[in-house]
Image 1: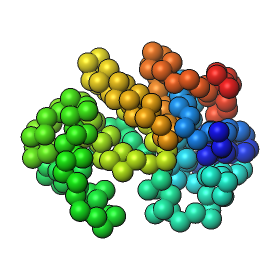
Image 2 (image 1 turned 90 degrees about the vertical axis):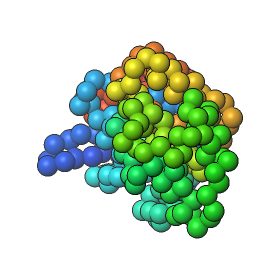
Image 3 (image 1 turned 30 degrees about the vertical axis):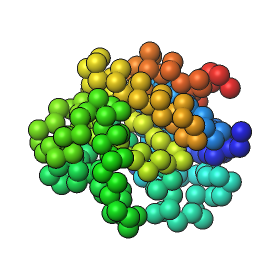
Image 4 (image 1 turned 180 degrees about the horizontal axis):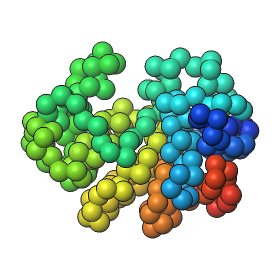
Length: 218
């Protein structure tokens, strides 16, 4: 398969502290990659650089063969979707959140699609009208994930999205993510501390002290 993300000698410093050093990584289109390692090793920093939420200090970063600096940021963020560890919802209702991706694309809200996606994560159609203040943590995370993929991105970045959830909610999200991945055309990069979760991905890298120390499945 063709390479969708290429990092060559990528490094990142913050306040003269080296967070990532000399990262070389090629991710193929349609890959599912888990990123593991101890706390503070640079995993989330790497994901935020790929999400274009942080800018690399040195090295090269290519997306679909084009340098990140040459890509319009709005276009890039429609293609590469980042999911936070703690779900961030806005407005008053679930509908406010799931209609937002349609609004920024100037297209009509597809209520049927939103209801089907809610059902795919075990939430009934009536959840569209629910106030976000009434949702549990697991429900908020499921709504946030749907908002990120209701228009299927090219790359989905998951930053410890199940770490605060109970086992039941984790399994719901794992099953759902695999069903989306198995449907094809989606590349997933997932940061996780959970070994069982990390092993769901066919490929993985381990980061320690800002460097890739192990690769599996490559």
